[in-house]
Length: 267
Image 1 (tube, rainbow, N blue to C red):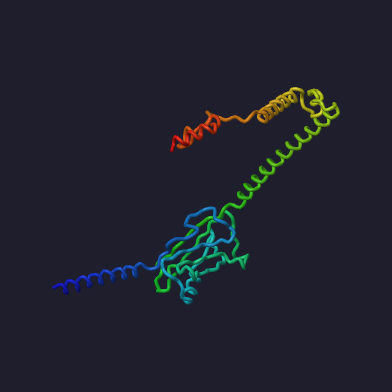
Image 2 (tube, one colour):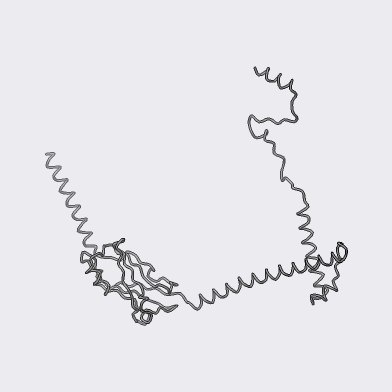
């Protein structure tokens, strides 16, 4: 009786396993994923290509040769560009379709253009399974003119900032050198600021010169104050003995007699 039961269980397992394999066979060839994805925008116009991942291996040389003729990339007007179809030996289900850079006239990629990769329904795997329907992946390249304009603006902003900082540093250096010369000519003493002379030298109004000098004096005063200020400890003083065990705060060294008495008391 037990033997019949065991046979029945084994038979059920075999039927279940065979049904799984049948289902796997019926699943056929499918495109699992791609890069770029369908509908993706702002893709690069350099080294244009589409990476395809299938659920079955495509290793047979004859199958690869036939499949290479069943893939194409077309522009928005339906014009095909020349491509190369590359099959991966390391990743059995991976196929790469790239623009053929060896023929520039036939593989010109435009900016802000929509392209579509088309897989024929007869595209097959090593087992002879086919896609069964035409599969397309559409993507759009980025706008090269806009990208160049953004890069130019960023470059001008960066160089403009560098120029402003450089001119400001040069202006400060010239001012410091002039003040040093005036101080040396005055016997090492500070020369009083003359707003009228400074206005004449710079071509600015007296009010503008005086406002700039006030800001400079305020900035210099803050700098001197920060330099001359003594180092301060924020918060209350921390005593290690208050926080660590077996650590005692000693106000002054104990005498030899007291230390010996303390040792004797411990004994």
